[in-house]
Structures are given as C-alpha cells and as structure tokens.
Image 1 (cartoon, one colour):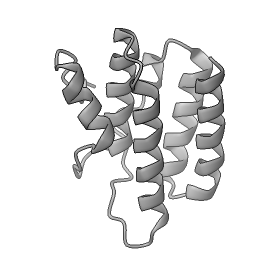
Image 2 (cartoon, helix red, strand yellow):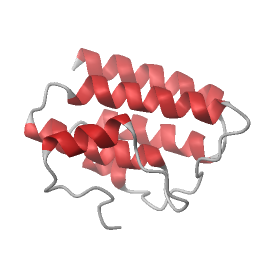
Image 3 (cartoon, rainbow, N blue to C red):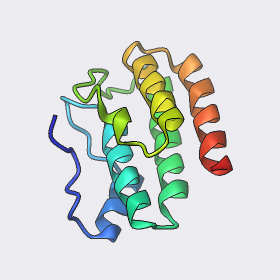
Image 4 (tube, helix red, strand yellow):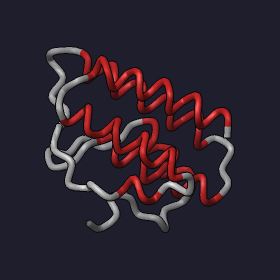
Length: 121
C-alpha cells in the first residue's frame, strides 16, 4: 500500500496533518496521523508526540459519538511495521482493529497503553 502521507513534505505540513487529518472515505484518518507521526519521529521533531496523541484522542472522541461518519475500513494493514519499536507497532495494529470493529471502549484502553508506552520510551 503506498504511503498516505507525502514523506517529503515540510515538517510544518506534517504537524498540520496531525492536528487536522484529512477525512477520506477510503482510509482511517488515524492512518494519516500514524504515518505523519512516524516520519516526524524519524526527523527527530519534539512536537510529534504531543500533536500525535492530541490528534488521536480527538479522533477517538469523535468515533465515540454516534453521529461520527469516520471510515472503518483499513486498507493499510501492514503500516504497524513502520514503527521502530515492535511493541508500539503491535499496539497500533490492535488499536486499528478495534476501531474497524467499532469497539471504541476497548480501543480507549489500548490508546491509554499506547500513550504510556510512548511517554516511557
């Protein structure tokens, strides 16, 4: 699957994607955030983690509302392999699976564990 994010984009554009991921009908907006976050971490950007977590939490709150129309189809099933930390990648894969199954309660638990792991590393 090709990258959702232009990896050659300036850092400010990638940070903007974390704050307001584009809404498309064919992929999870969380995937856009993930790919931008991985690229920003690779670049060593200090703002990547707080913006990523904020963006994910915002999307998660929207998914918890019944009126949210965010996609639940995941065409990027291997994007968890982009993570430099295999455990982080597995958490990401679990989180996306729960989102695709519309199980936002258990996904919130994975999101908290994800956040704790990011802050610990």
